Length: 462
Image 1 (cartoon, one colour):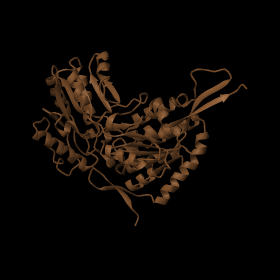
Image 2: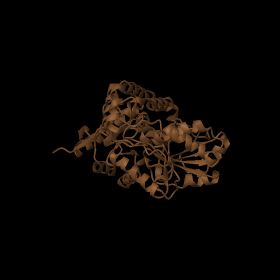
Image 3: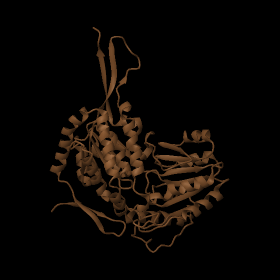
Image 4: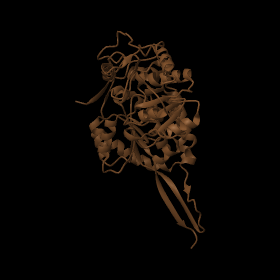
């Protein structure tokens, strides 16, 4: 009997889609096809490879009417937000724009008469992308597009919760006329994925997901010498200073905390507020949070859909209960018939009187709950922001740019924001520290991480 993956929709608990898992023979064949196709693909000029990405983008955007409700059914994001096309466009177009100069040979900085010396950036070969469900297009495109432009072939293994996303990418690349087997979508279980990574047939893997998942991938890849890009957990903090424009900070931090039901890689999970503005900030934050409408994501009025799986919502319920037992105050306490144990429907919650002895301030929540703490000064805020095993982004809310930079220099994080949050700029490298992982995506540095340097030392005068 053929093993399958079943996608359970968070909307109503039904099986929305089911797909067979590839056989081991099919997986091996896919890798061999990718290896064979890569040689010819790498010979194409960078500009030509990049044109295929723009054609793919056009085809993907053309599927918007089908993709948007599909996302709601698969992982619960409300249709009113229209998918992920803005970010997919911005990232794809930027990586196309910089491709030729980012991938150009780099001449030696000290010219020598009679010699030509430079470093070329060769493609890695076969790149595997293991993509998550929370932003299934955005996270995948971060590696798929630059890897292909750089001359590698790509094998995509998407999350079981968003199975149809891999198929959409495949259809878009087919519509773009991409040469066969340069991009392939596969459906694998965990055992097959680990076996493939251990085989030595993959040259680079990019994974976005949990810390445990990242450790499993490192373990599977041990001894193969493949390169790794790992974006793992996060517990992203914000610090609101006394001179912050409060209405702006409130509006953006509420959205940064609760958009996509809090299921954002760089979403805000903990907020530290200077004592001088703490009361006003908390009052505004609670009032703004009340605007969220929990419900069926297929309805335009809904601003917060269900979490992707019921177990994720139950984890948040446990975090809230533990925090309340330890003295936290819950400010929303929204009553909703769908909000019960075993249900993915979970309203937003704001907690105060929290501390770092509580899971909600230490462990990744990845859901619609946020704790707000009062701090006396920058020193206390920095210490608390760094009191975490994670480090993806941190946001600082102030009118003083130099003060923000000085604070940011001391925060252990991959990205420092000022007066914004929960955004990925493709011109700036996307990376993390500590348990958030390693590697880098997007920007010129992203291309450097998806290529192999090769030196040319040519004596032209003998």
